[in-house]
Image 1 (spheres, rainbow, N blue to C red):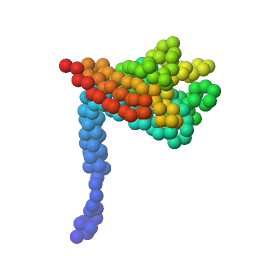
Image 2 (image 1 turned 30 degrees about the vertical axis):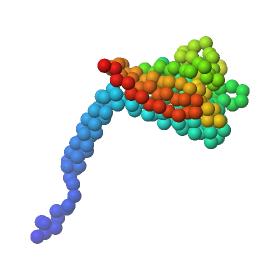
Image 3 (image 1 turned 45 degrees about the vertical axis):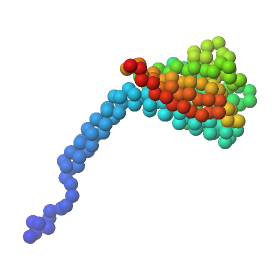
Image 4 (image 1 turned 60 degrees about the horizontal axis):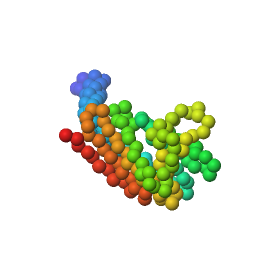
Length: 182
């Protein structure tokens, strides 16, 4: 009877470590399965871009600030107009340079007939170097009035010919279309 009273209930260290290893293996398999699907990568990248763009348009309208969007061949960033020049926003969350996954290639198509279209020498060749003296103007404007430069962002994967197009009209309405190339 004294021997039975000394037995404690609970898990041993080996049982606990075994459960952790099993959970780690399952989590790894799930992440590989999710990341391994190029179409899911396209969709996730598009939805992330749309969510960030919607946040910027809402903040622009709420705070009365004018913003711009610059997109190059592997990243994008938002800029703030301070009544004199374009600059990096004060908010660290908005000032971050946002990269597309390595497997995704973006293509920006602007509506050149738009009143909000800014003519630059090369609207695709934005350089994001931090040591530049003056920031180049953005390709897309997001105004506090709710107006947006209409554009289409096409996201392509390097794995196949499928792509997603994100169409944003002058009122900031978003249309997401998945294109299967067979």
